[in-house]
Amino acid sequence: MNSKNYIQAFSHIKNNTVSLNGNPIYNLPEQNFSVFIKAAYKHLETKYSKFFKMDNLSKLAFLAADILLKDSKSEEDDIAIILSNRASSLDTDRKHQSSISNAEQYYPSPAVFVYTLPNICIGEISIKHGLFSENSFFIFDRFNADYLLDYAENLLQTNKAKKVLCGWVDFDEENYEAFLYLVDKQGDTIHTKEEITRLYTL
Amino acid sequence: MSELKQELKEKIIEQLNLEDVSVDDIADDDSLFGDGLGLDSIDALELIVMLDKDYGIKLSDPKEGRKIFESIEVMASYIAEHRAK
Image (cartoon, rainbow over all chains, first blue to last red; front, side):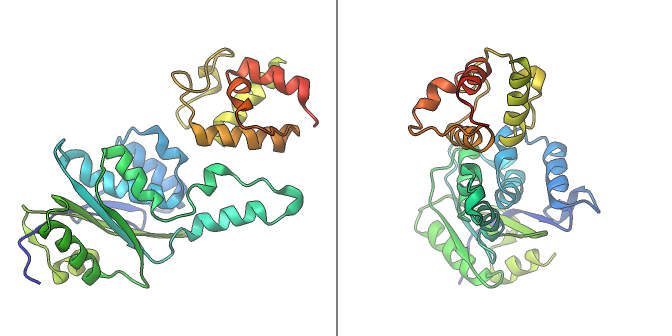
């Protein structure tokens, strides 16, 4: 596919490090995810109190997206969101299941239950940044650059969106990884499968 | 009653993940929703579960929560009168 679109910026959150365009901007080694992501949130001065109510997957996606959107987004932006992962919302599904597995102690938490779908993290991003655009969340065995490329190009070429936030955000127990990138009509990195794959593996 | 109010403030902060709020920030007569503590509809459901789990109070109609969760003062009075554990 010949693309006239570009990857404007990209973010990674993995191995207790937050990176923007390949450059580490925060690192807190040897801490569990909860401690790390809370410290990263404070370091990045995100200032969104609802963050602490989110489940792990949403915290991961929200912070990775916020790095890309907080400085680049303008009022007229129409940004679609296409995210994907392997574990769906399994981490939170397990927490919910444990709260309903004992009939004597049957106290399911509404605040946990609302996160038992992976696409809720897209809602969190959309609420923070005032996005009303098209969005989708896909479950794949592994990162699927082909699919994300085709979907984003289709949205841009049919004028369904002016920009597309794409990527992979996966959380299961203590294993996590986020790679998000913003596709725009301007930028330095051409929007191709090869470039998406290269940036993902940085 | 003052112990119960203190306990409720601690439970609300912990269970509703109010990271930037301390017990001292919540006055007994502060509104818990709207312009007060800013709790939302999911928080209201969490409070209903908390009443059941910690105090043995079952609300048959979630709309009852609107009045009961008006403030820590009102909540403590209701719990003191209706608690089963």
